[in-house]
Amino acid sequence: MSRVRAMPRQHLVAGLCLLALILYPIISPWEPYPQGVILLGFMLAIQASSWNIISGFAGYISLGHSMFLGLGSYTVAICALRWGVNPLWLMPLGGVTAVVVALLIGTVVLRTSGHAFVIITIAMLLAAQILAVNFKGFTQGSDGITLELPFWSRDYQNIPFYYIFLALLVLTVLYTAWIRRTKFGTGLIAIREDEGKAASIGVNTTRFKIVGYAASAFFIGVAGGVYAYYLTFLNPVGSFAILGSVVIVLAALTGGKGTLYGPVVGAFIVQLASEAATVYGGGSQTRVLLFGAALVAVVLFMPAGLLPTIEARWRKRHPVTVEFTDQAGALGRSPATTRERALEDVAQAVADDLTQGEVLLEVRGASKRFGGLVAVDNASLIVRKGSITGLIGPNGSGKTTLFNLITGGMAADSGEIYLQGQRIDRMPPWQRGHLGLGRTFQVTRLFKDMTVQQNVVAPLPDSRWRTMFADAVSGHEAARAGELLDIVGLRRFAGERAGDLSYGQQKLVELAQVLMLEPQLILLDEPAGGVNPSLLGRLTEVIRELNERGITFLVVEHNIPLVLELCDPVVVFSRGRSIAEGPPGTIREDPVVLDAYLGDDWRPVPDGKAPNSVQTANQTGAR
Ligand code: ADP
Ligand code: MG
Image (cartoon, rainbow, N blue to C red; front, side, top):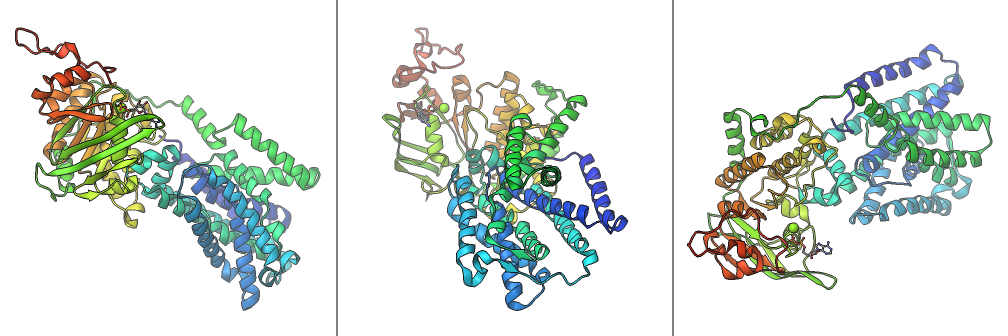
């Protein structure tokens, strides 16, 4: 089970807590003070849960998320005053403003990966504060905006707000739970775990991050509108306070970011601590110190957060025993018929645009330099439809780099790359994936903390919104993932954490994962490396079966007997370019290849028999 999936028990506890919270004001209606404290806990929980979407799931930390609360407050307050409408009617508008602003910021900042985002989020919060001070005509500047008092009796002051915030919190949690179930949510987590890998399996990382950021703003904006009415007064310094953002992060980290309930639990802990600080000691100065210290303590002593820590302890005491074995007989083969059907589905997904033998992939004069090192040197390569093309050559000859250029993990310095006659070298990796280009990695790059099933369901074969928001946990996509796991014989591991499988099994899962892309061409980077013999037989069998159903392969491999048996043609790479190409029989006797890579062990001996006792070629041969 992965860390991001809640234990069923958690839902039960959450339900009981909800019931208690619903009943509380009914049982003791005349206590506005504790109601007010809990109500602010709801509001913080709404913010922390929302923050969790972009920063917990996708791993892009926002330090300015309270900006959306301020935006919601101002939008609703300004509109309520101008139109003479009760603010409660306008609260969705607060959400809309927050989403629009998040889309604008996200579109600019989230195109690249990295740390710029964190800085920009703080900058935007401060910019919003300055704008609120200076756009006096709109915001009444530093004087702030005063709203009408709630229309209900003062005796019930907090109770309606209490229930509104509680309802919003329930909606927020359901909404994040739903996101978590979709391929969108799986994609966000994929981005957190390995953004480059996510892009290679068709996840449009730019779009996912922008939509994730916008999605994380909505309920905060709505809550902001209600908060304005609750306070009946707002000013720039209060509405766009950095402390508000720090508290959101603190809450999510304390409870456990990336989990469903962690941010909610954390919000209540932080809210109660904050209240205690206000009552027992000093003003906001003390609080800043306290929060700072708490943040450091959480990061140092409980980096995963409270809920994941409890869950890990619990699982340690109740270990799930799973036997991991690489023996072919214990691979959990599914009945031949379901497997056959799964293979047929794969065959269906391979479009018949090309006939066998036509050029599927063409690399023309591609080059890639790393400083002074020329890793790929004006290389050209052709892969024909229906072939299993081998690519061999010494370590460091540029094979993996060439794969990166083809799939878009790196940009070529020069040269052109075509897939089915369409130029692809300027496309982002996911677009190449959508065109039917899949790859596995030399060192497998599964999302280790996700389950095997989540890994296989993560890829997106196209760019449609419907695909993005399809249910990943059940329904068609999950069923498809099960079928693909059937093909590699690992369905019974579907619920396991991917990182717990053996290395060879991980390689097979990565192959199943690529199949989710509905690929025309699969690039395999050293599929046999580190795989034990029984799984290796399985792997080659699967490659052959897929090839028979129309999938073309380009395989980098050092296991020469395997290459000679499986591949035709074989291309030999040395010093960043192809030095020979032909059927395996010719390649193994080519003097140029023997010199550059295979070495003397492969030279025909005088009695005419070709040697085959050597398993792998001299990997560090001449470059
Ligand atoms: P192969 O897969 O054939 O073993 P690679 O493509 O991995 O070879 O590497 C080709 C050369 O490029 C090597 O000398 C390697 O050190 C260098 N190289 C590969 N990737 C990078 C990188 N990201 N930065 C700098 N040098 C790199
Ligand atoms: Mg390599």
